[in-house]
Image (cartoon, rainbow, N blue to C red):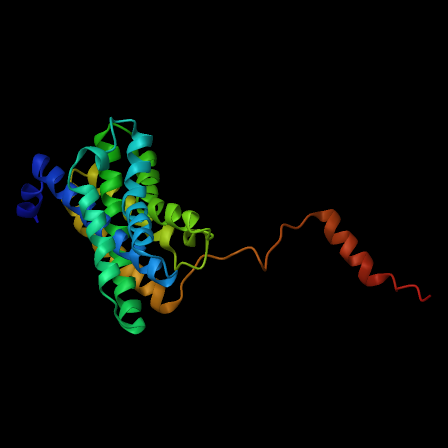
Length: 237
């Protein structure tokens, strides 16, 4: 493991983070293009949805970090990468079954790539562990939230998404922990692997966080009133 750590130290680690960020842009733009196909949008719609999906999370991250102009606007590779993902989704049509399987893997990859890069870039900017976990999570889910809002849909991250944000948070936390242990390379590898395994298992087994439909906060007054309604018979007209 020491050889891997040395290989991804200092400048090499930054280069690896950049390519992981670009991989997340491409995969997320591809996912955005797939959703544009479901919505039966035209070419411009594919490009708009794909670009927002691919660049949204990174833009939110960089704006909150206030560390200069967002990298998506200064690095010439970002916008073409998002456009490429959108165009591939526009040109290639695959079966629903094949797409469902591909979507799960791509989705898990996006979480892993962006959660570790978001956490790493936050720590590199001099912030602490909690902002790093927060921005790592926001980097992973931000593009999807922006995409869904643009399409007038409730963001998928708010429910019924097989623990999307939870996986992103765990992945970012792994990256932060390994960085504090002076093993950021291990954090990248372990975070992406955990993201892939956890997300795929969550989708296949239907894991999700509890929602509020079957639970309401109870007060003593509400309990007493409910008992009273059970005891007092209804008055007949």
